[in-house]
Length: 440
Image (cartoon, rainbow, N blue to C red; front, side, top):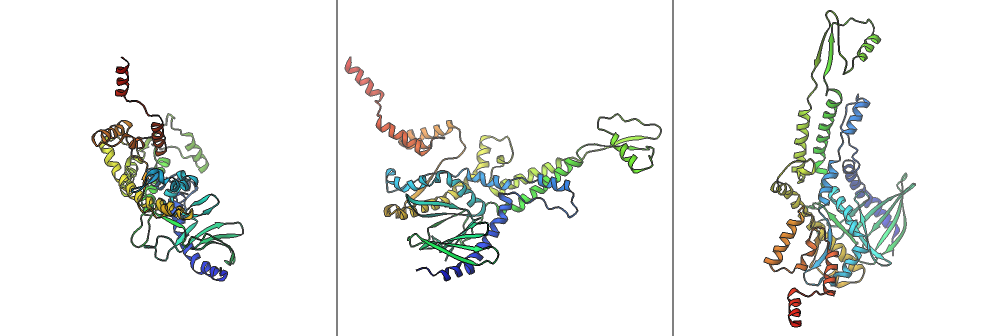
């Protein structure tokens, strides 16, 4: 039996403060990462022209860092060391039915950017319903944030015109609340029971430490990106105000009033031929060189590449050898491998929870499940085919087990090839020769 008063107190006194603290953290990151709304800090007397240049100086560096990593992460399927692939079809079905093939992309990106993201798995009319949630609108509250596999509560905020709706999931139900935006009073609406006995939410952590903190890719890079925007702003100031030679004239007759002086200045154009009588002398002031600012920008880019383990070729075109490119991408691949382990465990856990929801205990209790990621490493088709051919010939790996490792060929396509090969067995050349000899 639901105790509405206790649940209202739980939300108001414990869960809302935790959620508001988390929302403040991720919102500050979001201003840099997604909305890119943090321009260069300007003095109070800055002109509209300065503010315009400050807006132009903003570059979405953090999105580029996150996207570069996320584009190396694409889960193709899961496998088990103790079961045949065809026995995992029911386990994989919730992934396909809930659109997780493309849905994993924003899930990875939010976890990379903010440090955390979540999936929630609940019973539905046609099986398990997997929904993805950003830390910008939700937070998981754990009893022991390090050791517990599942949270005690999962809070999701849904903003409305006249108030805010909250859905709080615990080990019994999803509880619906409304909170008045003015008075902050909480109204309990209803429960919707799931009957699983645990809170069915899986955490995706970018870089979880032993204290339960997960740092995203964006937050540590904010000071560096701020410096990069300042370098760009300084270069724009020079480009806008001091990137051409200034023509000077001395000894001109004083026109006598400010208005006539202004008119005389307007008469001078860049393509004018200047002449004068008597003591009139003409000269030029050199433009300000932008080389120091461009060099500073390149230095910032190299620092960003080193700190974020991102190849510098992502940020600018450079001419490097194949070996140099492989070395430049080694840091990115190391980060990718680490994220694949972390996110892979979360994906497998999501599918095991879906198996619990759908009443498949064999799938739910298969702890040998592992994630299989698509190969997104940059290689030519010739390089890949040469390596796969050597694996088949020198290591006796069955060729059909290597089909899905061909660049551009995913697991589904490879499986269709295998089914076609089984349904249409072709005679070998020796078989054809033997048949020809018999006829002769």
